[in-house]
Image 1 (cartoon, one colour):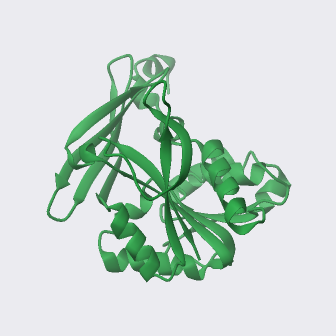
Image 2 (image 1 turned 135 degrees about the vertical axis):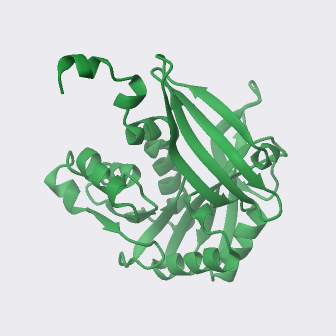
Length: 272
């Protein structure tokens, strides 16, 4: 491409949607610290082998194998394009030993055989794409069958009274603005369409960089389905509050009561 043509590209045209997503949405180190610490508390042993369902770019799976010489990970996702991006940006830079301990599978999380694992992670509300009780229960049953005897499933969930609204929320980063767009919500079926857009300083936009068609599951529904799928327990880990700011403190603890916030994110931890 001639130099003059390159200079006419907008920031949105030059942007990499996967890199933007990882910077604005994901925090593998913090997430894995919670998973590893909670797993050890529940089982009395160290977490070694995990599976990241709906892994996308496999950012979290790659981070796990980097954290320990005995850490193994499997990532499963249907999307060949996003897995190829992860191969280039996360798997290729690993050492040969680390790459040997990371396996990526293109396939349906309900049918891909990864072998027995200590823990399964389904984060970023990815399992919300199962919009019927039967489909979500079947997914949980599949996860349970792939766990070792003391294995654990880790999920996140979101809600609050703003979750039922059609709205846009903007978060400023150094080089872009992240836009979370709850574009449509149906209160009868709890089906929703959510989109992620990115805005840039030159006025350009990357619209619908990601789009999701979900069911907004409630915590009682998720817990009930986990137990119906055979898990021995399904515990909500609720975020504590920083007394000085009134905001979340980043510490999640087992809870049976939560706050009626406009928006909340929590973890669910299910023991096989």
